[in-house]
Image (tube, rainbow, N blue to C red; front, side, top):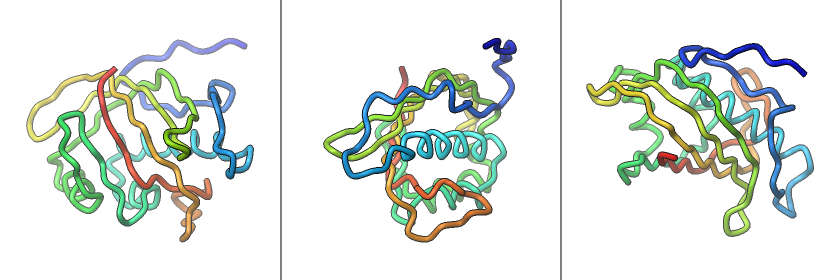
Length: 158
């Protein structure tokens, strides 16, 4: 299978053929790892688009994003910062996506090279997002056809 060269300034989704499944949660169907990878791709694309409505549909109401600084930012505050431009994601290059479990919870571990302006400082970071995946109790098929949402996002560098 040939892959076209990818330029770092472009946003792209990760095809399922590149998704690596390390282990699956014993109570989640076999399709969950692929759906979680799709959920992650939707999140990355919505962040670059600045689409807060789409991001909202991918997260539970009580979702918290813990930044690489350790700051736990509630979803509503994060979406507000994106809406006002305080946080602007310019581009991302997906490096890897892996389904896994942490303490019995299904997670997706995605690594990207992300260019962003955060509270006035612009840079490109090697970011890892660990997203805790839960079944979607209130499906929004327009923005989130996966059947899952993130209940927690932990961001670090790699």
